[in-house]
Amino acid sequence: MATSFRASLEARYGPIVDAKTICKLLYFPNVTALKHARARGKLGFRVVQLEARRGVFARTEDVAAYLERAFDSEAEPPDLKNSEEAHMLFK
Image (cartoon, rainbow, N blue to C red; front, side, top):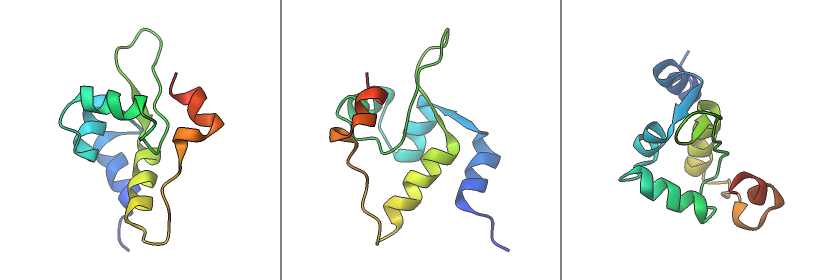
């Protein structure tokens, strides 16, 4: 039985990924580019800031699902730019 993409990412990175790991997985050149994409509403998954921690974090399963959707020819990426949820996420 083949290991799922999500399980493989979770085995390697754990349940939560930081900004540097998100950059690595999505091929952003640096954290600043990730911040700009977040500000423009171009991330298709939720990122959060944790109290008393620097940077942003995401659930590995959310990043994996985003990547799987991107490679699924039938799925369209979510339009978070105009959604109400995006306004809550990208403050």
